[in-house]
Image (tube, rainbow, N blue to C red; front, side, top):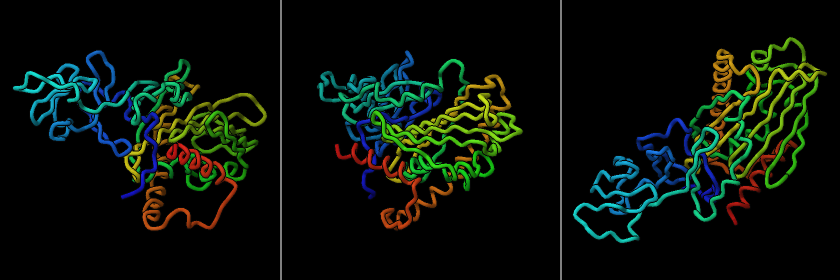
Length: 335
């Protein structure tokens, strides 16, 4: 058994909007097995994947209108979890209910609150994810399954100096490692800022922005505990305001278990909105980049299964943001 490393009183992305429809989808979120579906009016529902009768999986049942009928004995629960039918039984006690979780749909994703229901607050959603559905921005999203703990991926995203070495073929250049980052804590969030002046454009930036000179590259990372990282990026020819590249990299690192992660991502861009070839090129570039991250994080996890992270003996200034982020999550776990 691995220790619990994720809080429950928070929103988690549990699916992309297009995944959830009028069929039962099963998924594991923060070690809780759940089912997802939409009511006939389109509202998302998140429910524990177990019938409170014999603990059979409700994912083996079927939808009957807005309700779920257990495939074992036909006991039926409405979208609030209330038991509304027991075959052969006239009286149904109020306490006969399936477990449900607050769920909502925002910005192309389905979110569920896995903890105490009365603490669920929409204001706690990571607001920068709104760019995925904002006018003037072209949406793009995807998913990667990672056999590594979600905090390793947060470490990865908060210390982007690794881009210079791991992602040479897409978004990496020397400047991202050589330029110091400024880390600040603000309104319960963490911000990591880096402005790289007069640097060579990475290959994906050349493809997207058509750069033939050096660039000024802006990068601001926003961390929302426990598992959201939104990265604001723009690039312009050195000394100009011609932002030929302008996008957000939105990362939702939803823990499946203590050592596996659902990696939901989005890359809304604010330029060349109708360029389908660019969309496909960016999608391929993102998947290549994340495949490189996935490969090294999964091997890192194998080592961490044997040796704790606390045994490391080398520390760098770039460790400041990942370390602070882990402290913020630890505070959530202890509250």
